[in-house]
Image (cartoon, rainbow, N blue to C red; front, side, top):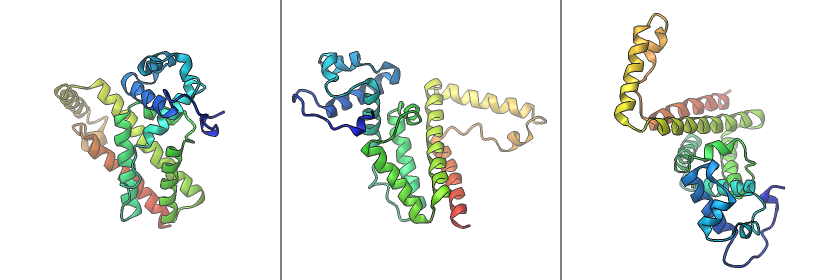
Length: 224
């Protein structure tokens, strides 16, 4: 049974589900999903492993609680803008910032039931913004899915790239050599030669460019 369907029972004050969740988030930030275990979490909390099981039933519950707590860092009030596009741009940008702060989030988003209060509040906000703009039914579902898939996929790629290419000079050299390689084979890759920006290393710019394309598509649906 998902942890969200259960009521937390009163326990001894030394531990709490909230404190355990905070420690789990910190451990995930430091070690990633593969580094999360009840034993390591107990060591961080300076308690026995069995003490944790008085508050959560399994590691799966810990992942759900930690993910929901991290998603709560996406500030809904600060994301409010004058138009639906402004609001969604701010929401998606803040989502990216939180995912970059907690690099384990993207890998969990597609595998966890997003039923926690923080996740549901943010889903409600995205649905509400698009619904108020005029989308309903399959168009609304498609728009939400397109936004989520774009942001999650972009950040996952960004994190993977940054984990492998930490040296700016080395990255610049790789991009330069890749551009030269394509240019040498312009007969095979004429469009890439003319239009691909392999020297573009600004992920912020790239993120907003792609997001605007997704939002343009949504706006087209609104104007039909």
